[in-house]
Image (cartoon, rainbow, N blue to C red; front, top):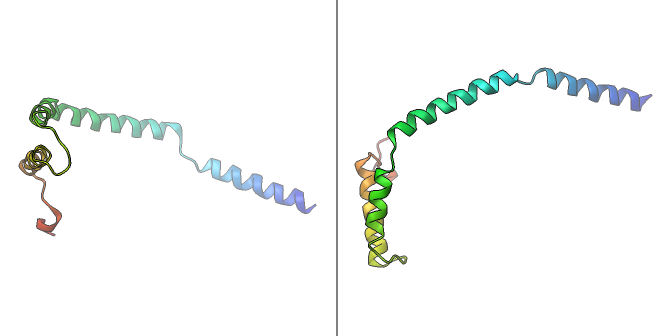
Length: 93
């Protein structure tokens, strides 16, 4: 009798949790809003900066610490700063 009661409780808990689950339409709405954000971002970003950066870094043989590596890092850091990136140590609260 105890096994049947335990099984009934498990079935009820599973049924109640299934009832409280979200509907498939909720997931569709989220997916469509994510696609909208992707479209907005995709319009702003082009491959131009990537090509420019690649053209710069391909001029050098890069091994950690050598001139080519350092120049590449400085170039990318400069691009990030122009875009508004601020180091955490220098950021305002």
